[in-house]
Length: 391
View 1 (cartoon, rainbow, N blue to C red):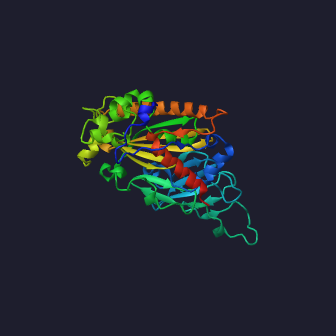
View 2: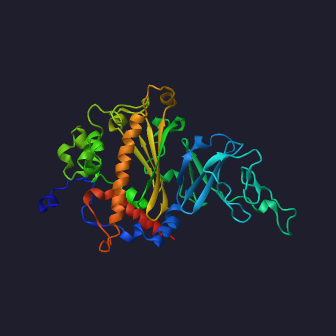
View 3: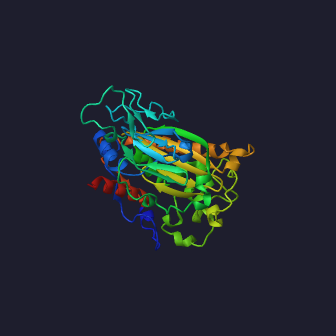
């Protein structure tokens, strides 16, 4: 960047950083011991998006979820309540479920190792021993319970009995996307990707658009302000020069004539009838819950992106595309028009994150520096530091 660029004026209300800020240490992105610390201090303390409630919509249906070395079992009880447990038998610690998803028999949850049997509420009902030793009481050995929150058709769980209040887990009020009828939506398509990068690398990429012009040509064309390497109007230090300009290059939103994130820019599904004119114009509303998920509401569908750590340098990403039932019931709606666009953008993100990860190993690169547009990365990195410092 030239001296002339550095001396440009900054209008009041400018969102960017006004001084150079160092990044997290590079070793935090690949060191196994530090990765274990983050699992303990971050992933085992916060709400984690598990699945859509409909994925265990019928009694006795279940899903499992792995977070690091921890395996979580979610099951729908005969009473309709979703519950979560460690996927671990109280006998000698065997895993209860081999499969990722399925439905338990009417007899309940039976450990495949020694046939200890549990109710869907987690109570131990029966062991396989002929007699019990003195002092053994069946009631003392229920499954290890975990908290569950069912919100707008989403199921969240946590690996601690005391996660933060769920109402504070997102960066926007929980009611922000009420106009999208989230609880009524159905999954039309899913994508799964394994990215060879640390989980933080992806979140940092998510929090800036300096990379957008070079990495996302289609997206930069659809969202013109992204083509200027900016996320929002006030990311421009001279934003007041265009404060009243509705041109999407300055104010954000989709290019003229476009309505949604799709290959054509046209809706791939039935548009949501209740959303405001301002939200339609914006083209995308993001809600974020670190460390595991962000939700993006478009005019005709909702995109849910979940991240899970697989190792110090590997991250699992799943993408769910949620549509109104009437979209999925009518074959005239080509939902792949939206899926293909997202697949391109997210594949570009995955590839550049992997490139970032590889470069972090340079012996000379102990840490980097954040540029003014990367203020949201600083907020994320400060959050990571604070979480690691908490007792």
